[in-house]
Image 1 (tube, protein in one colour):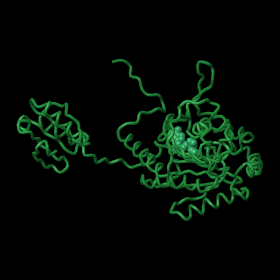
Image 2: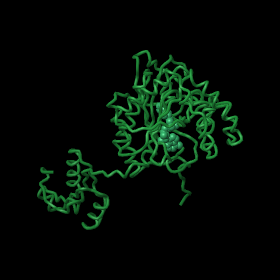
Image 3: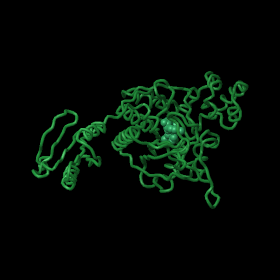
Image 4: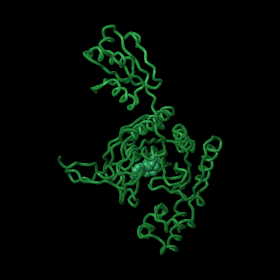
Length: 404
Ligand code: HAM
């Protein structure tokens, strides 16, 4: 035998039960997004690297450490998309969507790429389904986004905690930034090398560091939420009053900063009970459209990490009415016709290619989870009948082919 070629580290096949969970998640999300009138957009997997540098930010883990970048034959820097918001904004501007109507609701689904250290629920190719609302600055859009996230989780029967925070705006953030830098300078010796380097370039990113000693140090850092201007404060309070008048459980996490630079005001994450994984995340990004060359356009959105969400999903039990047609003797043409009659009625039907006795065939049918076995021998064919065995109930009846 020749050497076996395996998939690339961090890139995985999705099959079997994992795929059933994957589809269940995307079906639920798609159905809920349709209820809110979102329209789908299919985005390219490759974009100019600059798009992500200018949106996610130069001094972020995603751009500095995790992007798959490469040069094309003309020497231009391209990147495999690490997320979907930047591409959606690019498309929104490129197709002048803002000119058509005052607001726009878009959603996308597909693979994303980040060069992270692979582990359970963390891959280098993973999948997101995400949605963005353009043109609405009011907190009701943030509420709608969080409400959609909550509905998705509820429908999937997943219990998580929704944490929210506000990161302020261009007006109030500079004062906070100054306070934060003063604090970071005071505790500099406790910071990891990356944080030491980042604290002057992009101090807010420092708060996102995963190193334990840094996390411990940041417990006493100034919190952005205490520095909000009047408008940001009001925006955040109104979001909370929407949430309070719904049945959505949430809590404020003043340390929540997110790993991407484009956020302003509302940010949120749906994290598992033990707080170890974030499965759905998002927030507002009121400056990004303008920053990427469009007109000033407030926006807000979220993305579901499909693999991470699948980890919290119980096994999907499918109860489909599937049939296996088992022919014995010279009856194949007749048996194939029977299989097709069932298919034309919308049932899933497998025509058995196996050889061997009835017992073996029924064992197989049972093991593979078929609901009915359709047994066809020469007697059945002569009389235009089939023998139908209900694999769950164990009962067997003979039926005319018209009765199927
Ligand atoms: P994000 O937090 O970077 O946000 O990613 C969203 C979700 O993608 C995460 O909560 C997680 O479930 C999943 N995810 C991220 N990295 C990996 C990985 N390496 N392996 C598996 N799953 C992963 C965004 O991407 C923003 N674009 C969300 C957004 C939309 N904000 C506004 N609109």
